[in-house]
Image 1 (tube, rainbow, N blue to C red):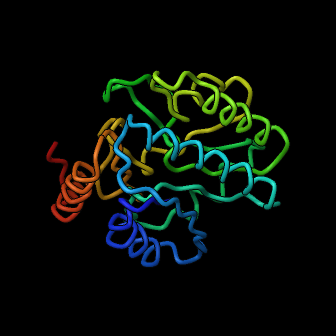
Image 2: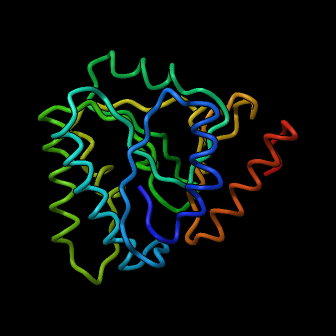
Length: 209
C-alpha cells in the first residue's frame, strides 16, 4: 500500500528486494492519491482508513492467506517459511512484534501482516475501521493502536525477530534478518535514513545502533 509521497520507498527499497528474494509473491498495489502523509497528521489518519477499507475488501475477495505490507520495508532474505508455517496453527492473523522503545505500547505492529481470510478476522477489521471513522477528529488514533486494543477478539501469532523493526531487540545476528521495517519514523526523510543505515549494517554484518 502506497501513497504519492512513498513512491520512492516502493521503487528503491521495497519492490527490488521483493523481486530479488521473494519472487514467489505476486504483489497487488493499492494506491492512494495523497501528497504528504507524515505520521500523526490528518492525511495519515485518512490513509489508515483507506488501509482498513482495503483489508476488508481483500478478506472478502480471497480464500487463501495473503500478506498486507507497507512499503517502508526492505527484504534481505526469503520469507517463504515465515509466511507458510504460522497459520497452520489455525490463527486468524500473524503480526510483526512491537516493542515499547518508540514511545508506544508493546504488542503488535501492523506494517507487515499475514491474514487468514475468515469471518472472525473480517469482523475484527470492521471494528478497527468503524473506530477509525468515528474517533474524534482532533484526537490522534491509528489502526495499530486500535488493533492492540482489540487483540482479545482474534487468534493471532507474531513473526520471529527475523521479521525485524526498530522496536524489536537486537539479540539476534543481523545476518539472520530477512525483512527490515523502517518504523519509528515520522517523515519520509527519517524512513530513508533508517533504510540506508540498516543497509550499511547488513553490509558490515554488524549492529551499529
